[in-house]
Amino acid sequence: MSRGIIGLVQLAATLVLAIPVALLGLQFLTRGELLAGAAFLAIAAGMVLVEEYLVTPRDVPGMVAERVVGRVAKRPEESDRET
Image (cartoon, rainbow, N blue to C red; front, side, top):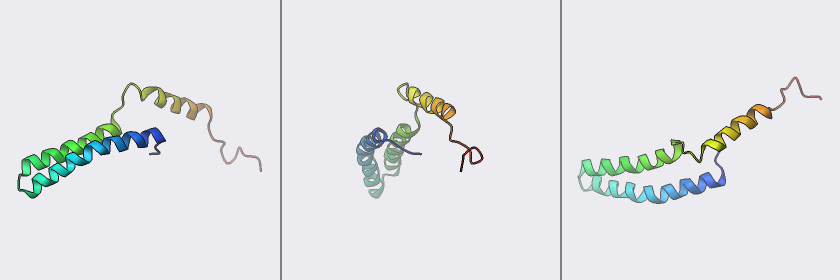
């Protein structure tokens, strides 16, 4: 999946918040507290997955525009090109 500049900034912001949570989970795991460690790791993974796959109302116009442009401005087929 290609990602624009804004998408990269959003992912970076999510990782800034998710990495400390994941490190906390790893710290709990190394101390032997498996339940808390696994919970924090799951929360960190969930934060990244929600950012990646959750569609928000702000995303819908962009998705619609991509589909419309893809249908209207199709790439020419190999047989349609003049050589």
